[in-house]
Image (cartoon, rainbow, N blue to C red):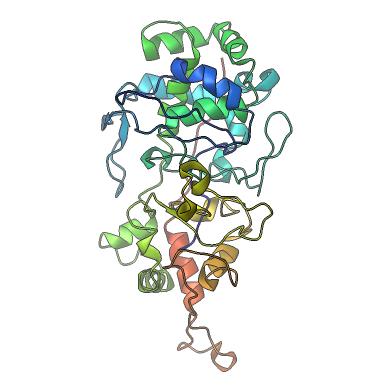
Length: 381
């Protein structure tokens, strides 16, 4: 249904290296480094690795179960630990990682803006503009392919590419690594996380990925309702859930993640010149042209604007677009069609019998957003 700005991949302009040959193995940032350096500042898209790295289930003590989310797969060579997460959280907010020591991961992903940046399109550290909207980091750890077009096969590979491209250090990454290494306060954090105080780009990426995987959304009012507490959401939100299913939204925004982790063409940006080919630019399959990652609807009320081009300014705008079936004449996936909902008639606006299915649908979407929890920012060393 609503294509909200979910994490198809943060910092979305950076190209990735081509698929490696040989058997699948965990993605090493050292191995990717040379190729990504040459490509990170380019807007060209490259194929994702043919196979993702092997994964294991995250330790439930480190990533506790959050109802009703499934256990999270993590790379076998980067299972998160409390120490790695703490280091990654600190690095995430440290501008010393970015161009001229003045741009942090937070420069695009603000906790108080739903882990996005509230802009349709945002600037890179070098001042150039992104061509796609910066999506939220919420539940990014559950993705199987990253970026709006799915060209990254691991979160670690995506973070490295974004660090070099979005954060502007393609030519100076090792210089930034050395600057971090000079900060005395980081030594005990790296030693606790990795067993030694050595600072490397590989370790920084792995720590950042470990923290980002903790950015999750679950245990919403709707989840309480779905588990038997019928007072947890309003009557209009409950009706909205039925409408959501009735009109087919759940076929792409499937619970519990409220995404199918796949790619669809709903005609957004079809009139652009040149058009953004999305997934088609990665697979080179014409059938994939115009397809983009289905974003999650969890915490959707927190991270406007929406869609890969940021064209949905509000949740209402996004819903109205999706109900419209897309622009006339645009090539869209076959299941995407115009939906007409019941609206209150002028004569019955004050009547209890008045029906406003659009309002009900919006109420349901807002019910998938949990109460905002206090987030403690780290103190930088």
